[in-house]
Image (cartoon, rainbow, N blue to C red; front, side, top):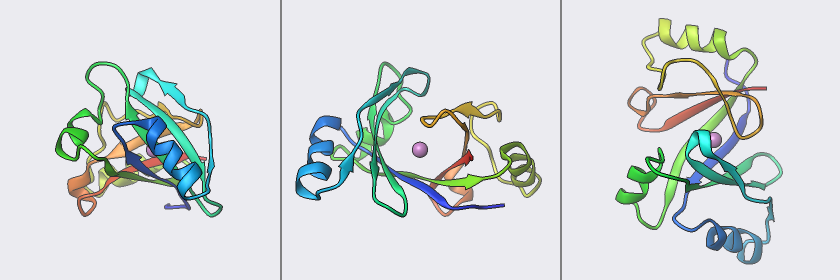
Length: 134
Ligand code: CO
C-alpha cells in the first residue's frame, strides 16, 4: 500500500526567512509560495532530488499548524507524506486496522492538486502522516 516518501513538512513561523535559509544557506531549489486557504497554510516546496521539503506557514484564523507553532515557536518537523495508488482503498484498509483518519475521513485536494488524507499521530509513533494519491 505504502509508496514513496513524497515530502517531509516543516512548520515555520516566517516562510520568507525559512525559504532564504534553504535557498541561500543550504543552496537548495526553492519554489514560489502557494497560499492554500482551504488548508489554512501557505506552502513552499523545495526539491531535494529524492524527495521534497514542504515549508508550512499559518494562513488565516484557526490554522491547523497554529497550535504546533505555539508549542514550538521556532518551527519543527510537522508531518511526513507517503504516496499511495488508491487513497480510498488505503483509507479503508487503515480504518479496518484501527487507524484514525483525521477530519471527516474524506480526501481533500492538497498542494499538488491531488487527493490527500491525514492520519492520527497517536496511531503512528507520534508522527502526523499524510497520504497523497499519485
Ligand atoms: Co504535506
